[in-house]
Image (cartoon, rainbow, N blue to C red):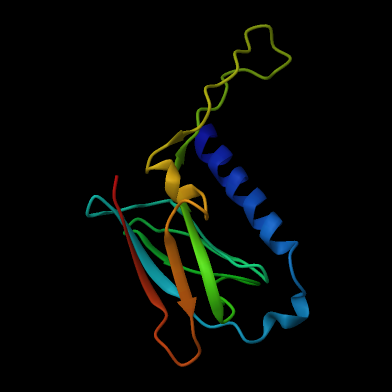
Length: 145
């Protein structure tokens, strides 16, 4: 239960970083964007999906079937038109059993990537997307080793 809370905390921190970029007045003009993430042919549940651009990024978390719906300003609003580098990550995070002040505290191991780490970096993932008005904007990302 604690490791799920840590995952959500890290995801929320990423959202705050994205939210700090850009002008909220430009919230109009988003376009619905949906997609699917698979790894070795199977859907990837609870993966973080980030569409990164110099102007403003969008993000989502995949559901149990590996599907996602991007948000920029509010849930499900999509992304602004443009070209994006895409990052996808899924981490296993082990929470410490005891608080840092407890003498039994042992630092947890670093998070473990459950899909190849290259996909967690926009510069190494090789994944891109172009969001366009008047288009379906449905993306499938088939991840491999």
